[in-house]
Image (cartoon, rainbow, N blue to C red; front, side, top):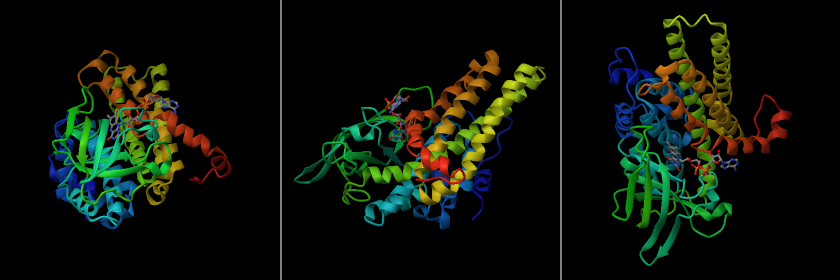
Length: 372
Ligand SMILES: Cc1cc2nc3c(=O)[nH]c(=O)nc-3n(C[C@H](O)[C@H](O)[C@H](O)COP(=O)(O)OP(=O)(O)OC[C@H]3O[C@@H](n4cnc5c(N)ncnc54)[C@H](O)[C@@H]3O)c2cc1C
């Protein structure tokens, strides 16, 4: 299996001088292209998503795509490759529909959105109101999901819904629903950011679920979410590190070009941001295997917290050092705003710091290991 980056290089000519503008290719198109090339299979151990992603290969794909395709298409790919596809592959052991969808995704023939965040606070999934109703003809879903990547161009929606009232861990289940059902209404999220990610709000008005029913088992919704969101958090760390590195390189080029690179105050500020970036890279490399092989939540929380804070700091420095040019279309100020995603989507910095605090004793006792 050729390396993912090699497949990407072969499939598209190198850009002339600057990276591709955001949104040149939609997330759906990029997903299809990666699937056709076998590059999605190549991300997983033994080409099997249920066996886990190989962190180095995901890092290569992210670093390459981040520079060439823009944030929207990469967001679309990351959510599916890190979370949706492994979750469905694991659930496929219990249901043929999930297994079939996972096979189609692996070839890039199907796009599936992960619809967890509800109309209420996304930071508290146990408060979600989207619910499953048992009718004489089967299970149907009612509710609203907001800020869902891939929603506007998905074939299927993987929806987290409650099956009983109350916050108990086992009250939630995943279901698959066809995105083109007339009882599904999707509106694009009005935003100047993440062009091509297909982010939208989804309204479910009594939508029948696919024949298999619960995906991965009734009442296992939050358990499966916790297990698979860990890898998405690692993907966020790899992506944040790549985004910081590229922002610093572009900023340094600009400072050199304008004769500002020798200014001591500028060098100090820049160097501090570079140190933060290297710290993030090291953390991601050190903890990546534990996250992908063991779905280690604490390791993922450490990475996610560092990614959010580092990206905010580094992109803020870079945007400031770009002066007025930072405000150009797709300039560093735009990149700074998009990088704020690392501290919000998939769990805000505050919520992952709470997980780190929960495991403080174990982390302090064993500095070279991570305890789940
Ligand atoms: C571009 C984009 C793509 C997304 N894609 C998806 C997707 O594919 N699927 C999906 O399900 N969701 C998706 N989301 C939603 C994302 O996961 C949520 O935005 C996130 O979980 C936070 O939820 P919220 O926006 O409702 O913020 P809220 O829960 O309203 O929180 C707002 C802020 O309050 C603070 N806060 C919240 N809780 C606490 C706390 N306990 N302690 C301290 N401070 C707190 C934090 O600063 C937080 O940012 C996406 C979001 C964006 C922006």
